Image (cartoon, rainbow, N blue to C red; front, top):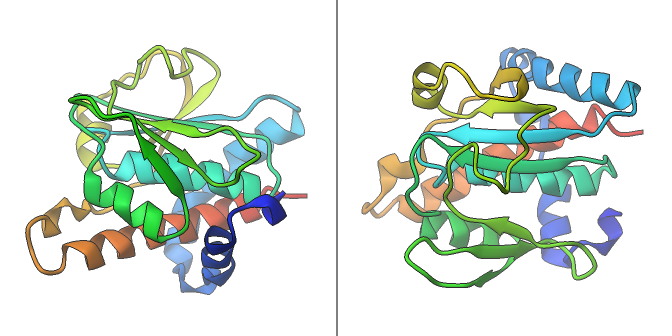
Length: 205
């Protein structure tokens, strides 16, 4: 199915080097891989809800890249994201995804809704800041993927989650307002993309 992806997006994914992931990090990702493999072996739906405090950067990037890699490797999966608080989907994060090959349309509003697409023939990913238990997200039979330490430590119970898996990333927010902002966001997005590529490469076939 990856052949149907936008050319720039597919080229970006093709170029991601899995050997840049350290062995210790691969061990951390194994819990998520094992969850996906178990679901696939039982022919059960795969639903992943990526959770961070504000649902503005890391959880959104993780959701979107995980969905892209599921398509790339032809793995049946649906990805979601949410937070402990509602803010907005960070504009620099959105622009980073666009530069890396996605297309996006903005519906506006105080908490903008971005419709991101990775191919003309696939459903768009509706991305906006929301609580982890928002009606758009699954209420049962899903894994809660905790992408930041604050959410992991301050959100001890996720109703309906059958698994809780930490996959933490450093917040690119540290570079907001600096000359390095775009570079840091691009690097974090690429890091997440690379790791999601590795995860789903272990589940394909």
